[in-house]
Length: 170
Image 1 (cartoon, helix red, strand yellow):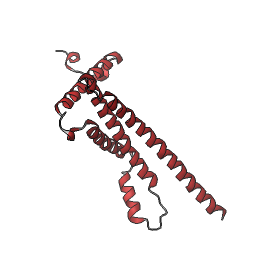
Image 2 (tube, rainbow, N blue to C red):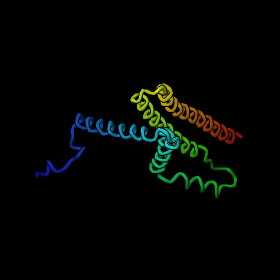
Image 3 (cartoon, one colour):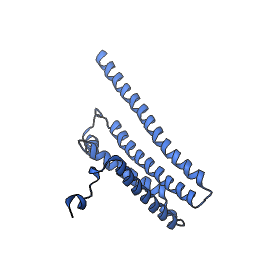
Image 4 (cartoon, helix red, strand yellow):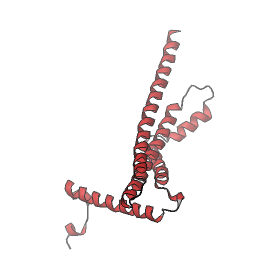
C-alpha cells in the first residue's frame, strides 16, 4: 500500500468530497438520535430537548471560558472577595456568562426539538407542529436573550459614562 492510499485526511479533500462526508456523517448521527428517541419513547427522563439543552449550556460555558484570556470566574471571585467599596463591577461579566449558558441551552434544546420533529415526521405522530414550534421558540429565545442583554449593557454603560461625566463636572 502506498502512503496515499493508507492515510485518510479530510484536509486533502476538495469541497465536494468534504460536503458529502459531512452530509453522510450528519445523516448517520441523525438516524442514531432518532433511533434513541424511538427506544426512549416511554421514559420522560430521556427528553432530547432537555438533555441537549443541558449539554449545550455546559459546552458553550466551557467554550466561553476557554476563549477568555483569564478565567472569568476567577476575576468575578476576586472582585467579590476584595472589593468592599463597590468601585469595580461584575455585571457585564455575569451577563456574558449568562448569555453563553443561554445560547448553549437554546441551541441544544432546538436541536433536541429538531430530532423530536424528525422522529414525529417518520412515525407519523400528531405532535409534528408542536416540535417544530419548539425549534422556532428556542431559536427566538436566543435572539431575544441577545437583544435584551445588549440593551441592558448599553443602558449600563451609558449610566456609567453619565456618572463619570457628572464626577468630572463637579
